[in-house]
Length: 164
Image (tube, rainbow, N blue to C red; front, side):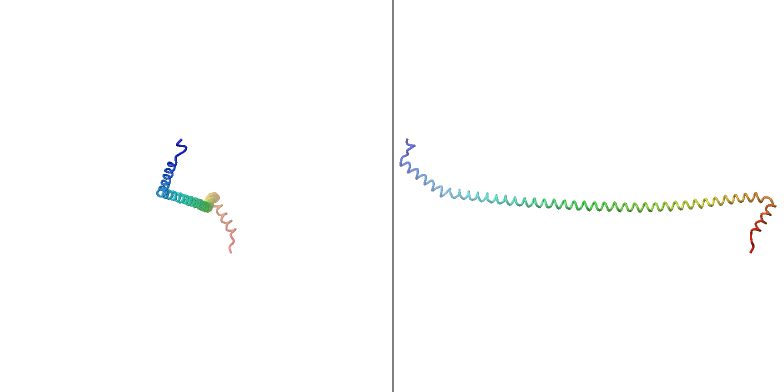
């Protein structure tokens, strides 16, 4: 039963040992433990502060990334619009040039046709005149083969001509 009811001497020495231990712990261990706890608390506080700062920087980076993406999209849209305008103007210009070229070709073809037509008509007139002369020559040769007929024809022509 000694363990349940300790003796006074044992209580005294246990209390003295406890106080000595408490004094030694307070003198040598308590301050370093508290200092390391304060250092750890400061380190945790600094880490949390750094994490908050990093989080804020990430938000700002995300915002700036979104802004850059928006600007890039706007620039892309502007470039595409400019490209469409250039494409449309090139197409329109090509159409105009094609129309002008077609009109020039048509005009040239009409002039060529007109020239060919005039040449054909001139050639036809020349051939008609040659044939008429040939026919007239043959008729006159036939009609004027006789000397009496020649004389009668000359008199008839002289009678038609009025002398002034």
